[in-house]
Image (cartoon, rainbow, N blue to C red; front, side):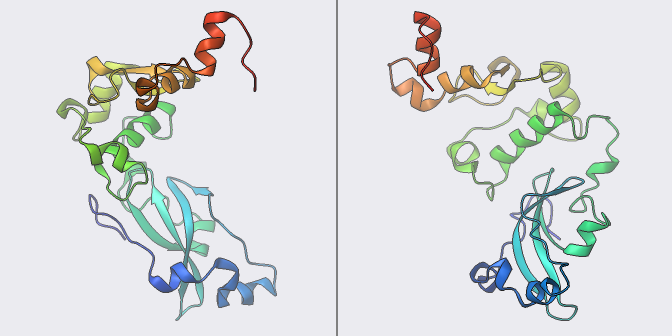
Length: 209
């Protein structure tokens, strides 16, 4: 299990080089039609990222999973199927603010991940270039403060920074549609030509899809 705040477990070179369907444990289970690729599936607060090898003692298939808290852990198939583990061990399911699994809480966790978890794919575009989260939105009461400042996330909108080079803080954040966010990206700021969706709105000519 990953230590909280650390980079989490990574795949061994052998696991990286062996595909799921070439795994001896998979081939054995395939004969009994028990084999299944779990990549991309969710179990509680865990999302399966990729095949992670097998346990040689039990011949169990292992999976690298990412918890909603941002940490990673390796879990065997049967544990996921029977939901004997719903988190990486962080106790996320015990939190009492009542918003676990909501759109608002998922946006909050995603913000924390891209700014504070170096193993995240999008970290270089956020925490890696100095984008931070205000102290008011971090710590044990961070989500409660975030919710009080931002309100519930509206359907069809996600968290956006008005200044794409600014930090995550009340004065710089809003709930915005994909179209607004696409027009607000760093690449859009460098390109003075209006985006297709923006041009369609201005001219009244339908966007060609």
